[in-house]
Length: 534
Image: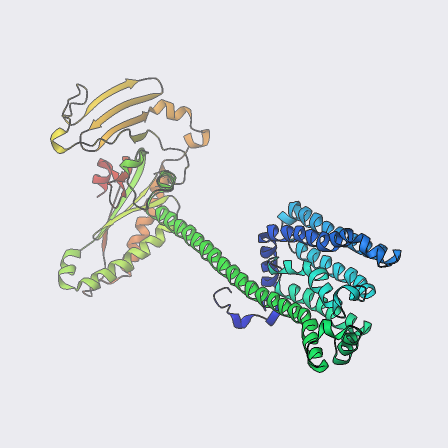
């Protein structure tokens, strides 16, 4: 949505064509305009007190000597106090809204703009009443164009804060159009003030003055000079209003562009976060495909926040487990070597892919089976590894790196332990009723801790159901797999045209499982059981 948004998709002065986006933008603009709005109300209060209130108080004696009625003072002071009250209420209500919980929850984020609209409309109405009854009261001070000076330096002064108040453009335009319509057009026309600055009105006014005090040329030229002078404040008012509107439009458009850029950056950040999350899920799914669940969870847990490179020894975790009742199955293809010599490599690859994919489907049919690896034409399957269990397997061996040494080949340790007899290992062992502990130092790879749980300790923590588990069930699923593999092979044809025949070897017994190597780690099985099955 953000990428395709261009200036042509603005709905004129109404903002974005997408109205939901427009509402979101107004909420964002309100949150970023708090200081501007509050400061604007402060300036409006100052401009209401000065020059109007100060001017009235300083020149109070003059107005009394000029025979101004009490009604004049009551109306002027009342309207000035009303203006101060309106701006004070605007400041207080805006401040309250910004501090409210509803504003923090974005449920009333546009309320400050609504308050500003009502404040200026109320001010326009109050000043329209004041301007209508006092439009001619200053003629004896400023001449027939006193109403224009009264507008420029009195009534319209608070509207100058619209320069930096950062209201939406439509709202600024509405406030200024209403003010100009009332103060420059409607009230002066109704009260006849524009007639006073016409040629005849200025001429009649000049005739009441001594000629040597106002004119040093013919009367017609003097009328033009005075007329331009009287109209200049009104022209300045219109120019200032146009400047405010233009600046408001430019600032509003720039603010919308900034909002668009913010949305785009936010969208890209969220997209990147989703991509990283998806990538993480894909990596975890790949680990669950390559390793049994116990190993995969261990790798994911300890590799969280690290690079994608799996450094098995550096992670300091379980990498080896003992299993006493595991059934291993190997298959290999009869005549594979001769067939490979007679066929193209890609044909051999295609044949093996077709055959092993079918074997993979058989593995997926039983959750107790685990595909260990394929080596050439050999396919290795195991059962009884406890790959669905969350707890550690029987007689688990925990290998933990304590401190990876920074040693060269020349500085490798070659100490012999009396119990192990291995010249590459220095060991310290402790026996207890529950565990067997050994600390080993390898010169090139670091210091390891091996924690081996005794058989009696494991059996004590097994559930009754686990103790009664039928050891033959693991062997049964492997035998079923072997039978299915033999049947599937009969339906396959090798690239040389000969029917496919496979040999199947099965054996049960103890094995050690674990992840081997730093680069391209693999889950492997070791022990004489594997050799016998192969």
